[in-house]
Image 1 (cartoon, one colour):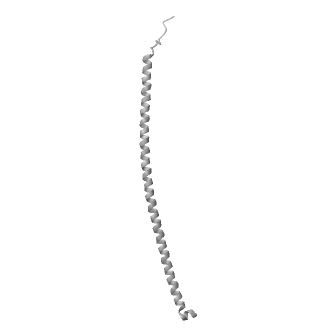
Image 2 (cartoon, rainbow, N blue to C red):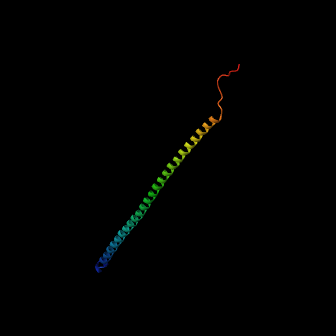
Image 3 (cartoon, rainbow, N blue to C red):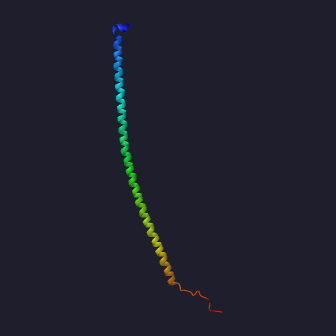
Length: 107
């Protein structure tokens, strides 16, 4: 009550209001700073994600290319093996005399 008479109460109240406003402004600024930092971090992560996706797509394309190349090599190898087998079979037929497999003339 004495404070009300001397004006200290009003002065203290005004001081509390000023400190409250300063604290609110400080909290608001900290929240803005935090949001900005989070957005900056997110932007950096998005760039990194895009780079990783690009690298993965590029690597996948290279793997498909390698697979196609390997498949073509396998096909050529299979053709060579088949050709070699056919050639070898023809050579064996030419080299080996034919035997008459008909009925025997001996009685």
